[in-house]
Amino acid sequence: MVMAANKPRSGSFSRNFGAASSSVPSIPGLKHGPNGTMLLSSGIPDLDKILGGGLALGSLVMVMEDPEAPHHMLLLRNFMSQGLVHHQPLIYASPATDPRGFLGTLPNPMVSKDDKSRVHETEQEKGLRIAWQYKKYIGEHSSESHRDGKSEYCNDFDLRKPLERHFFSWKQIDCVSLKESADLAAFHERCSSFLSQANQNNGNITGGRIAIQSLCSPQCEYSNREWEMLSFIRSLKSVVRLSNAVAVVTFSPSLVSTTFSIRLQHLADTLVSVKAIPDEDKELAKLLTGYKDMVGLLSVHKVARFNTQVPTILETTTFSMKLQKRRSLVLECINQAPVDGATGSSYASSGSCSGSSKTGSFDF
Image (cartoon, rainbow, N blue to C red; front, side):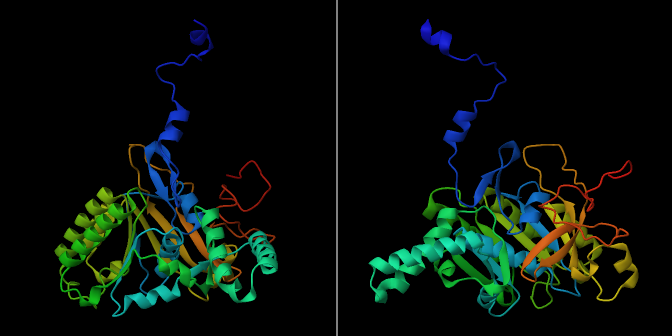
């Protein structure tokens, strides 16, 4: 009777948060999303917040390229670097003859001032106890364990610094040249076997990543067979769902027919597009704040929704792409230029689409 009296009353509709948190362990590089979904980071903090926390496991992300500028490469680089930092299985495919050379262009995570001071202090302490000839070997492992111990969900990447070598020591990395592939059936089997083997080796959900650059490139032999590419995307979508991975595929709508482009957009769970900004557009410079710092525009056309029928409604669908201090990629809400010439703020730092801090009766 005493135990029954001390037990808290709970209705049939109350949720047991303790049981849910204990039954599902936290996995580095992943976090819990709404409606029982798991999310992994896109490698861009602002984009994660726009999409509701990140990219849902089992989703297909399509990026529509701009034929005049390679801005889609910024999204791919951050997406791939974030996966390597979290030691997640990665397969990369491109029309290049040597796709492995693209790994040398991946950005390195930015180190904050606090992290730099901590690493400097640990090196000084170890220098008093360890012989100088062993210092460089232990320093490498200590910096790696420090980053792994921090286990950030999303990092800020420095586009000017290449990714450090120890991140490539992860064995589950595969690079495929689409130029040498006569058809996409062999590549589909390679993706399927790669992800299945990765799940068997790890024994849990690790969030595999597939990055495909310029799927419809004319350099590939299958570029004129649209039905084959459409069948490949359908099969890839099913593989990604079964293996709890995320696939990011870029394509240029100008290289395919309008009907085929619409079908690809329909198959995507998350659909975004990038567009370059002309260097000298005086009319656009007068309308937008921070126009001189913009490198392009990113538009979100569709957001993945799993285990729900409620669509995601965004405050705005078009964002400006900027390089903060010419190092990290940030996304900002597009603001109309005010009289005082104030600049906009990052999407991650402000949830409002207005760059001004003053509120008025007509400020939305």
